[in-house]
Structures are given as C-alpha cells and as structure tokens.
Picture 1: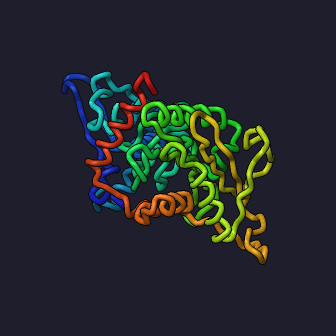
Picture 2 (picture 1 turned 30 degrees about the vertical axis):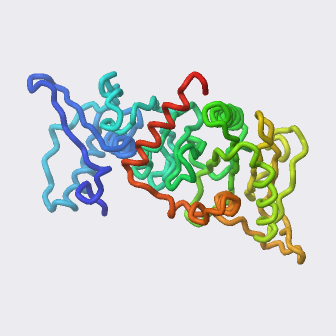
Length: 339
C-alpha cells in the first residue's frame, strides 16, 4: 500500500489558528486526497459528521500501517467540510498548487481518475502547465512542447469520446479554439495547426486537442506532407467539405477518429480532414488494419520543418522551472487585450 511517506500527494498538514478555538484546518497536497478522506470519514463528498463505523474502519487501516491502533474516539461527532481559501492564498500562485487559476467544484467531477495526467483531481496532473481554465475545459501546455505556444485544449471530464463530437463540449471547445487561433494570428503572426487523435490506447484515454502555431502560409505544405504520410502509414484522410460541425456529421464516433484542421492563412479559414478508425486503409491493398501513429501530428511537423527531434514529446522535455516560465509567459500573452 502507498503511504504518505512514499507519495507527497498524500501528505496532510494540520493547522489550528487558536488553541482555545474548537476548530482547525487540514491542508491536503491534492484535491483527490482531500475528497477521498472526506468520503471515507463522512460518507459524503460535501462532508458532514464523522461516523463511528467509518472511523473504526480508518483506525483499522491505520493499524495495518503502524501496527498500533490509535485512539480516535474523540473524533466521533466531529464535522468535516470544505473551507474556502482566502484571497491571499489564491494569489500565492505556485505555493498554493493552483498557480492563481480559478478552480471550482465543477473542475473536479466524480468520474475523475487519480492515475490520469489530465484529470485535475489527479495527483499526477501537473497544474503548473495550465494556462487558463474555462467551464468545461482548460488550456495547458503539453510536456515536451513543439514550441513555446504549443497548447492542449483538455475537457475537464475524463472520457474517451472526442472533444469535438461530444455535444456538451463542442460549443466551448470551438470558442476556446477560436481564441487560440486569434492569439496565434494577432500576437504571434502565425497560423494554427489543430488536430485531435481520439483513439483509445491501452492505458485508457482522456481526450484532448493539440493546437500548434506554425509559420503563416505554411498550411499547403503541411497538408501535402500530412496526406503523403497518412497513406504511408496505411490510412486515408478524407476532406470534410460540409460546413456542419463534426458532431453533426455522424451520430456514432465510438470507434475513434483522427481529425485535423489545416490553416489557409490570413484569417480563421481552414480545411478539415478526418479519418474514422475502422475504415479501410489508404494503401493499394485496401488493408483494414490502418493505424494512426500516436505522435502522427507532431511527426508531420517534424518532416515539414526538418526537425526530427520534435516528432516525439520525450525528446523535447525541459525542466519544471522552464515549464513554469513558458506557461507564465503564455498565460500573460493569451490574457493580453490584443489577443
């Protein structure tokens, strides 16, 4: 069993402002740990009175770790509930673990996974990479970014359904994508290359959309190379000529897909291409065993730019200090009125 000694995300600090007061605070290293504790001791996500039976269970588990059963009878009837952080703590940025971002309860849904990089409630979620948060999604820099303004649009809720085909998400996803495209054009004088590989992987999948600023006017070159490489990989991308949104084109996208938007330059115009997982491949034999490489979008840019090192994120990883610097710069740039 993993304990607080092994995992910093499980550690808890106890704070009692005044010894004469009959209340105190428990400060957890992660929302997931706090939520788990609250449910374990009270039976409710919103907290409540500590119940005797749940306290007995907690003491038994503690004994398995320490070989000593501590007396916690004085906790019977104690009430646990969420405390609102002060404005000062919210502004403490990195020290609070939230980096000045405005999180609320909707950003920590019940289906959140504790082993998922993208679930905000997970101890493995690196919040220092988050640029800004919205209601249904957030924008973050990826590990091993292609460039200093490479971003991901990540839905808050965990799930494998595509971000652009989930009706609940689609409107906000389009709004955020448009904001990033405007930022690329006005602040960076670049176009935006957008793609989503929504195909299940062995370890599960939390959908996300990649948005990478590229040189203005480079869209045709990217398109040509992308179509060439897709055929080489055994699948065929088809252009979407309809003006309908992706979620309106089909009812069932459960098999997965690879979707891409190629910028035309000079505005918000772009060409759309799609490959539906399970469709016949694009090679001469028409093989149905088509496969979209995990890093396909990056690999296309690697060939276009003749920079093989950007083809895989692991080759582009920088220190946490550098990540914090890049994210802070991105956050400032995106919030600028000119963006």
